[in-house]
Each structure stands twice: as structure tokens, then as C-alpha cells.
Amino acid sequence: MTGAEAKLIGHEDAWASWRAAMQGQRMHHAWLLAGRRGLGKAGFALSAAAELVAQTGVPQPDPLSHPDIILLERPPATSDDEKKREDGKDFSRKRNISVDQIRGMQRRLTTRPTLGPRRAIIIDAADDLEKSAVNALLKSLEEPPAGSFFLLVAHRPGGLLPTVRSRCRQLRFHGLTDGQLGDLLAMREPDIKPQLRQAAVEAAQGSPGMALAFIDDELAPIACELRDIMRHGDADFTRRAALAAAIGTRPDRERLLASVRLARDICAENARSAPPRNQARLIDTHARLVRLGAEIPYANFDPALTVVEIGGLLAEAAPPKG
Image (cartoon, rainbow, N blue to C red; front, side, top):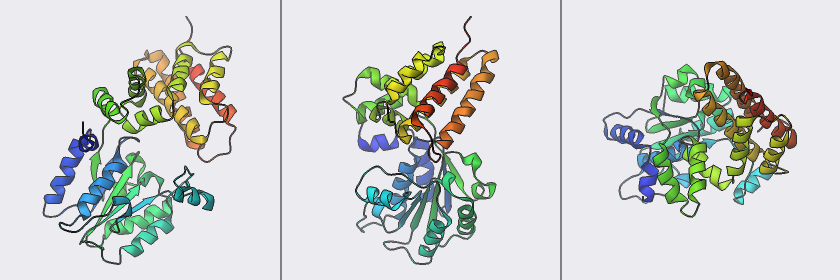
């Protein structure tokens, strides 16, 4: 599989719709790229924006530094995080995309594009817009400047205002099949063992981003312990101790978040196949894991207690003995 094929895999319908629109007489000015996290929507947005603004015979810079592609995302949390980003290090981000970022983008839209007649604005993700930013964005969606096209990445499109959704043409992104995901991992990570590749496919549930994170962040031992708790419970806390060892003694927020996502997906997977009498408990546990995951990026927390809570929630959801 070539790099171009990898970029296309799973996105064939979205590319077909996008390119047909580009060749049409009047291309819609706003697009909602909708689907679960980790499916490659942001990568699609950058590639699609690059195609949109490209001009024959005019050298095109990389999409991330293109003067006619505006990318809005959550900024670094502090000045120290800003420096970490400049140095290419991991950094923390603020909770939202602010109204000031939207207004800064709107000021740029009062000027003409630099290299051609079109400009692309990517918002990654629209779920992260603060309320006042959404209201400010609506003005641009209602009266877009000529040559300006919006691509809104959305992990939870149902949570967006109906007025935003109604002004966008939607492109749906779906998870890959296990076969597609396995082929993609074989190309991207050719040196990993087949057992680890299969574990990543099972954990990712069709999401390439989650599969790659599973491998890069060495999440296989965590997934193994979580599944063990779900199968057998943890009456004497020994499995929670094993889970803590797998996660590590001083896990950062990202590792804890990844553990919560794994626990949540394992819970959902079991709920689909559980008898009706057990489904309500699993659904409730899934909802509690979602709430826990929403708190981790922003709240003060004790990593060790958070690990115990993750394991405890799955232990409560385990099938009752007998």
C-alpha cells in the first residue's frame, strides 16, 4: 500500500463527494466533517484544503504553513506550553477555541487570499468552540466572504447548534474494517509483532488514530488488565494493583485518558453482547467513564486514585458470579 493509498483508505466516499463539489459550478461554502475521534478527519481537512487552494503553476507550501489555509485549534495552555510547541515537545492545550481566535480569523477574511482566489478555514474541532466563539462563527457561516470555505471537524456533531449544522454540508467518516485497519498498521508499523497488531485492531474499533496510539503508547498491557477486570471482577483489589502497574507509577493525563477510553470501549463492547439483565449496568458504567474522561484534562486529580477509580468502575460492571 502506498502513502497515497493510505491517505485514501476509508475516506473514499468523502473524497468523491469533495472532488465532485470542487468540479461543480457552485461549491458549498461550509463543510462539516463528522465522525468519531481518530478516523483521520483533521488529516482529510488539511489535504482537502490544500487541493482547494492550489493553483496550477504556482508552487504550494506545506498545508500547515500555507498563507491561504487558516487552522484554528485549541492553543497552548501557557507561555511555557507555547515554548514547548515551538521546540517540538509535547504540550498542554487550553480547554476551548476562543472567540478571540474566531475574530482574528474574521479580520484575515477582510483581505484577499495570497496565492489564488480561494481560502480555506479549518476548525479542529468545532466541538471545542466556546459559546461566544460559536455565535461569532455563525456570522461568517451566514455571510461568507467570496472565496472563503470552512471545514469544521466534529467528533460529536449532534452537540453542535442546529444553526451551525444547517449551514454546512456534512461529510460522514466511518470506522475502518478490521481488515483495512490491519493492512494500514502493517504498512505504517511493519516491525510490530502480529499479536500486538491484532490487539491494536481490537482495541481501536475501526479508528486508525486509536490503533496507532495503542502501539505508540504501549497500551497493550493496560488493555489486557482492563479486560481481565471486566471478565472476572476484582474482589480483593489484586487486579487493580496489576492495572496500576501496567499504567505506571506516575502516569500523565494523556496516559490516564487513553486508559479511560480503553475501559469505555471495553464496556461498550461487552454491552453489545450482554444479556438484557446486565446491559443497564454496563451502560451506566460507560456513562460514568465518559464523565471521568471529561474531567481528567482539566480537573486537579490524584493519578493513583484515578487508576483505582477506572478499575473499580469496570469491577462493578463485571458479570456477577454464578
